[in-house]
Image (cartoon, rainbow, N blue to C red; front, side, top):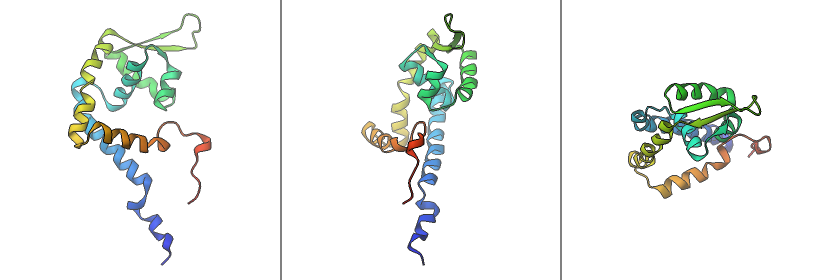
Length: 152
């Protein structure tokens, strides 16, 4: 038996652990975000806007590590809910600015309970979640060409 055979076991795959964890995390957030009227991707957009608003579509997409074309449908739904505004800049019509409405800004108060509820649902504390988040940093965000994995 080749000692490398363990490398190919499903349960030993980082990719499998991350994919199943991501799916489970979204499932944990779903009932917590439902009273706020947000899906998980919409929640991420709102988090970015609560940090800085207004911001350009390009800046928002970069912050979310997504393509602007992926963010646009989320923005349309959030605008329809009355939580954000989208407007072209007067000095440069190529730039679309995204900002919070008063209702979107107020929703932040309710969202302050989301992390508390996630900790309760998972039986973890803030320090444990921060350690897990920090351990995932090499795999999170936009993939840089220089960050490609090298063989074992």
